[in-house]
Length: 242
Image 1: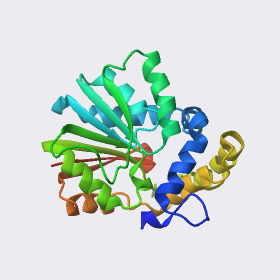
Image 2: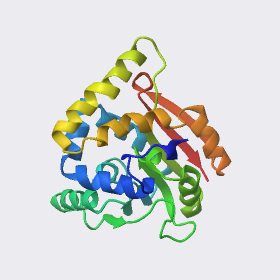
Image 3: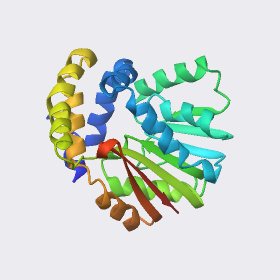
Image 4: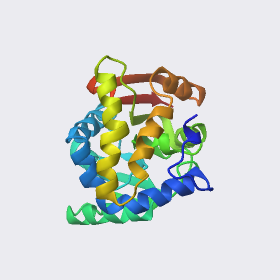
């Protein structure tokens, strides 16, 4: 279902349109994340990363790494030898590289342009894989999950952080109003891309969240799958193991 929603109305694959959208908004992405979420997104990322502490992963893949926020946070919260961040947007990666260089973490974090549904890595390469706010942008969700499972080592852990749909009244109604009307209006003015933050709402509505996503994890071969809702259900952390 999630692959039916595309950023733009024009013809073309979802993958190409998502790439174009993130290239367009890359210079404004970090600021808008902090501003539009009131900074809560940083707390969500930290909680997701903390689910890996017990695993003590040394080789980590961060899929849909964007501007490398998760990769950078993992260097502080975990003790990895290497983090590879992969994304389809060259412009987002360029912003990320500047942040990594500024913090002098080039020896730990490597960013690479690539497709989450065709990962350029050998089987059983990574101790852990993270994806923050990226799986709903996959053109084929099951293909992307299968690829991540392939490159995970046995007993390796997948951690997915993704928006979900609140169900509690009246928070559900307030959230939907903000996401559908306020957020796109602000995003339109500040990001210079009228569709980007409208697509955000539409893609969240289409995404199979909660137990539906857990079922998809199981279908694609992951085990010990769990879902933890955050901030009254705005966001969820999903974990699974190979």
